[in-house]
Amino acid sequence: MQTQRWIRDAQARGWRVSWVRGKSLHIACDKQGCPGCKTLPLDNLGPVPEPCELPHKGQVAAPVFDEYETLVEELRRRRRQLGLDQGDLGNAMGVADGYVNKLEAFARVPTFPTLQLWAASLGLHLTTSAAPLPNATIRAIEQRAAKPYAPEQARFKHDR
Image 1 (cartoon, one colour):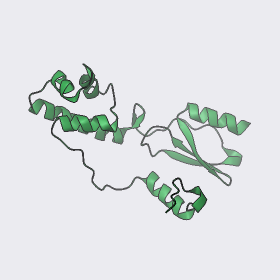
Image 2: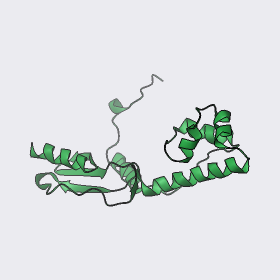
Image 3: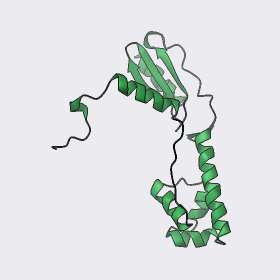
């Protein structure tokens, strides 16, 4: 029962349980894209950790949000370069009045299809390029390699 209370208190401070293996508990920061994490012994969790000390902006890790800010600034710059105001762009996108203002002011975060529409309406394409893998992804790859899926665990089974 004490462990459950400890976990609830940790969640209240912005942590989530990632995994429990053997006698270890792994918690991670609950902010999107944050690499903050800790591995603790289950038999002696100690005091509930303070909130993650890494920089965040709202519910997102600061470096991730900084990249998003750069993208929005590029879209804003392109809109102005084309001589459009926010209302013009909203009409071209087919979105509600004031929505572009909310996007540019970070009051709304668009879904990916809306982000694609935003860029396309400005004559831009969103593309991807290779980048270094985050530590969390590297750990996930290593864990998966150490314990591959059994055939019955496959999410999609095909009769081919």
